[in-house]
Amino acid sequence: MQHPFTKSGRPPAAVIFDLDGTLVDSRDDIAASINEGLAGVGAARRPDAVIHPLIGRPLVEMFERLLPPRLVERSEEAAALYRAHYFDNCSRNSRIFPGVIDCLESLAGVPLAVATTKATFQAVRVAEELGLERYFELVQGTDDLPFKPDPAVIELVLGRLGMPAEECWMVGDTVHDLQAGRSAGLSTCAVTYGIGDAKDLSAEAPDLLLDSLADLPRVL
Image (cartoon, rainbow, N blue to C red; front, side, top):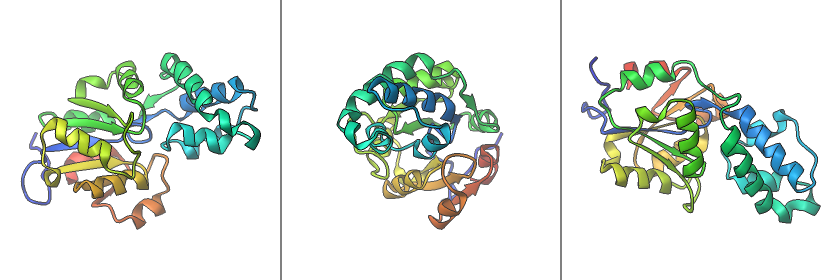
């Protein structure tokens, strides 16, 4: 299959994807582990509908928003409990979004990577559990880097791949993904089926706005 082209008319040097909400619908597993963290520090469990919109934010920030004021100082402890639970339960109810495998297989020959707010060890675990790791040259978490919309994690991926930003794409489901990609100098693609609001994504003026990743190789 002919490879997709960037706006310059040359094949893309690489395509970088967000993970949660872009490649994988992991909302229920994340919410379950968030509730383990909340319960572990003595807070009430929260409905999934309250947790889901926060996914993609830094983990400690999520707990700061969900914990009652008297327990906010235990956000780091709750986050540690989350990490321990999530590592062993990250694929119980998670699934790959429709169109993702078609997209990744159609991009065979183009270097692909993941740049996520998750810690690297958690992101690698999810990719392995769902059979996605074989498609990617690199799965990179934010770890000690600033979180998106800071472009640091994307810049790290570009450096490790040895690819020029102007020939690469960032694909994500939130405004922060788009802002980070643009700040790093990449073209940006937003997907509408994830966590981000379609109107907010459109207002960010990405280079592409797609309802399915299966369309990506045909329109890049």
